[in-house]
Image (cartoon, rainbow, N blue to C red; front, side, top):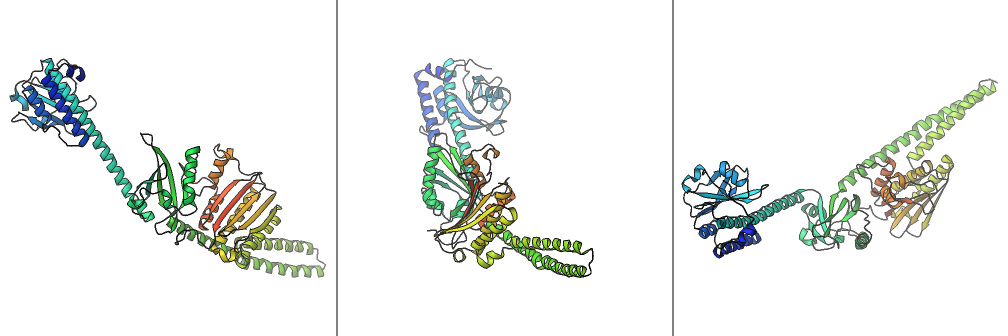
Length: 533
């Protein structure tokens, strides 16, 4: 039977001094338990405090996980109490209401207890326990008020315990996931200081977590990015515009040994409940992917070369032989005054055109000038062929006082730069409808820069999901990724740039058109084993 109910604060205010003292003792006990986990400041259980305050038997039953039974925890002055009670009858009624409930009839396990009352510890949505008192009827309003105050204090402690356990379980799961993932996960504060460094990051960078936590994240970057990082972070805080935050990018990392390597980096901004901002970076070492891509392109280059040589040495020679045979046949027809001589002469012209086309295809597939005379000469020849083929003014030039690329640039880097230039020139003429194209090779002290400029229509930022010009430029300049929706030619240009050890940038020209730039380091493969300067 449900007994009259008052709120715990109002009820506690009307208690006699002895019961108020008992409530204060129990509140102190629950507070220290909640704050320090298992520390008992009073040396007495909840049941003992209740039993001695009311001169009754008392027990605190906790609800088990399946909520079908209650298990006895703290017990005072109660011999022969069963270890569990089934959640049924009056027990179920007591768990379903905040009021004191007289257990009538008594559940079979409590049959020898005489009169008993029970009060729920918890809420309708989440009951935690049931406080059962034998030897009290609950008719006394002061007893009910005392039990409500006790239930309220115990509920506060149990709710905090449950929250703490849930938080600990969540943290344990998060730590388990972060500890076993193959990707590196790093968190930094708003100043760039590393706060966490998971096992995946330890494997990737070669640092122990203890060696880098508390240091600036720039320790994981080679120059010049290391020196520039804090400036990027300050600019982001001032403008709110991030270069990589919220967008996956391919960047270069630096291991503890000084070796640099390519990696995918995704950075997210996280606002904590206290208003603090942290940044989380997820990192994947893509060295093996780059090696595979390099091998795929090497095989593709070999196949391209084979096809070009077949065109030159096979089809080209056969067409030349056919042309020579037809010329002889034309001369014979002309000597005989045959009316078929003009028709045969036209056939000779068609064969010559086919021969020239086949040899042109062969030269485009196998840049002989690149192997024989270097990149500068090959680009000049590329400009000449493009001018002759498309009728567009294509000009090639070399500037700068750096070392000659033949002695300072890897052969595969020169090959990749040549194909980037060819694709950029083709795009400028065929898609950009440019009237003038400049191919510029700039020799610097430590890097070689290829720049292809045109005066065509450029790319339309509005066509890239309504982005601004700057955002559109960042998008087309972003490294190629597996789910990329951009054209295959653009993706291959990015791949070639990275295989050459550089990066591709595509942006609008100052006076219209498009500027494609690729800078590669000299005397380097791009990802090297020697420490960065």
